[in-house]
Image (tube, rainbow, N blue to C red; front, side, top):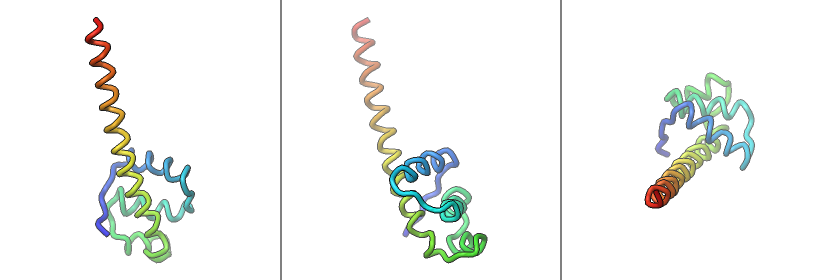
Length: 92
């Protein structure tokens, strides 16, 4: 699985979305943060938290999918905002 890095802000946003959809333990979220934000390997993150990478691989995958959806939603929002601004500008 190719793992994309994300910023702290992106991680916080998708963590909220993930919490709404399917809560994971704080330990699994912490391991995922080390991998996705700090860029360390899944094996190293597992060692830090005394677990196995298989134990938190699902949360990494879910956060990655949430990031994709989050970015798509932001793009749609930006597109809709620009359409709204254009319509209001034409009226003026």
